[in-house]
Length: 130
Image (cartoon, rainbow, N blue to C red; front, side, top):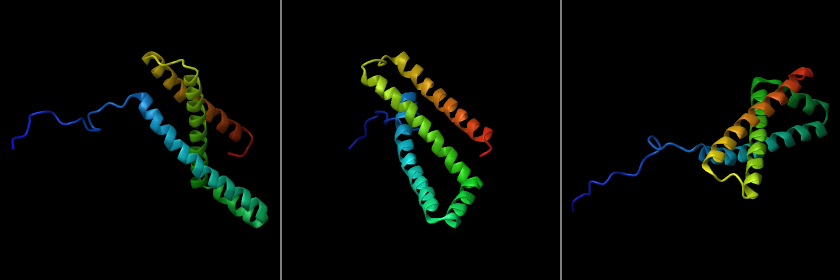
């Protein structure tokens, strides 16, 4: 058998991901991250219900660099998922399906995520809990 001289399918190294595709994948990833963050929230609430010793231990963990990193990542995931969910609701109205709107709204989602995360963490720092 002879092999054809046809090109192979492009691999991830040569294929340029459209921004909307990357944001769609990130939306799914942040949904999973929010579930993991919910487990951390339940752990914190159960520690509060168990008494001062358990609550202090949880607060100590959340004040560590790892705890703060987890909370920061969870807040970014929360605000990204919120902004991207609003984009999907806008699409549900039948608007924004032209290529220019796809990219423009994708950048708005990214900017909205950054702004909301910055506002939330500025509020935390201003109130002395940062």
